[in-house]
Amino acid sequence: EIDISAYNTFARNLITDRTESNTNLNWSGSMNYAAGSNSLSGTGVTNDGNLSGDLKGKFYGGAANEIGGTWTFTGAGGKRYGGSFAGK
Image 1: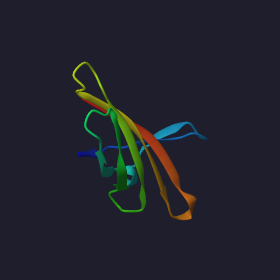
Image 2 (image 1 turned 90 degrees about the vertical axis):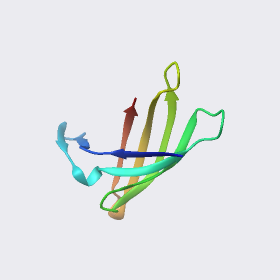
Image 3 (image 1 turned 120 degrees about the vertical axis):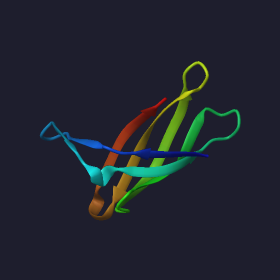
């Protein structure tokens, strides 16, 4: 099991092309993987509890010491957010 968190999250509005800090998108979650597998999956939730969804990722690098993946969260009123993460 891998615990993962995102802080200082930024959001880009694709209509206005503006990037701004959005602490409502700070999130945490857990991902699991089977032994010998490179695919991770799990769930996450924003710190305020208003959005939740799926996390998917993979290990990278020569010793699999890097991680990258995507998140897709939904909430009330049809709100949908997605993004990517990476770590070393």
